[in-house]
Image (cartoon, rainbow, N blue to C red; front, side, top):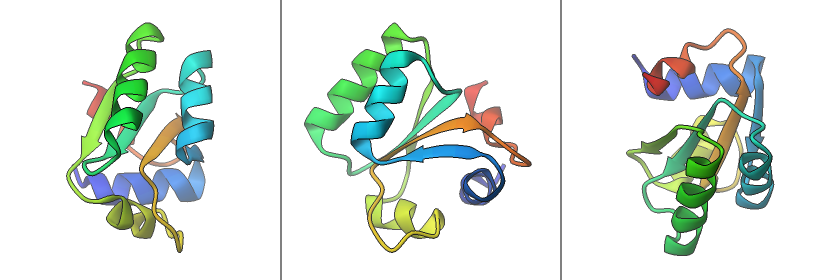
Length: 98
């Protein structure tokens, strides 16, 4: 599966939360199917995401690129450290859960 294409299609056709604050809030509430985190996310952010996603039983996928790469894949002119996929749309991104 092409992860980059899956993320892009999910952002374009589904419902995705971008950004660390809103993502952590969604993870705490259990509002999401999958968390995607950049490999270079700050240590404190990684710890928060791992703790809260474990509590809400939400799978976390570590993206092999940087937050700059993740931002450009999402079509945004800024860095994206964390995103939460709430609805995949036409994407097959939820295959990462397995």
